[in-house]
Length: 102
Image 1 (cartoon, rainbow, N blue to C red):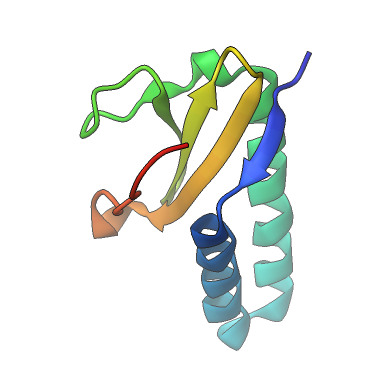
Image 2: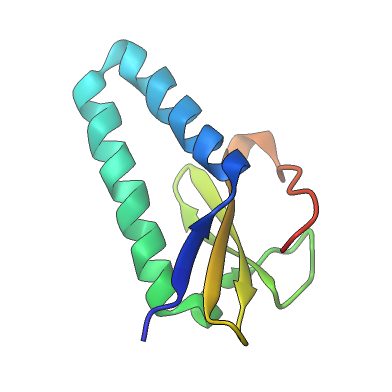
């Protein structure tokens, strides 16, 4: 059974900014990317414990899906069955500030 997906406000803003930036040059590519990101998050919700632990955080609860060139960072709440989408970040920018995790 899939974990429930909850988006942080920051992750929502990250996705909007990414799609907007790409859409300036190629609106069709931006729309495709938005769908692919959502699809990747839905897959992550099916298998959240198979996601890679974020090396910079070294916590079982903070995991990521690499979606070249982006890092989608999650907090996994195993007890409640929730996958919190924390950030969507261009990998070239290093590790994003994720603030306090739920």
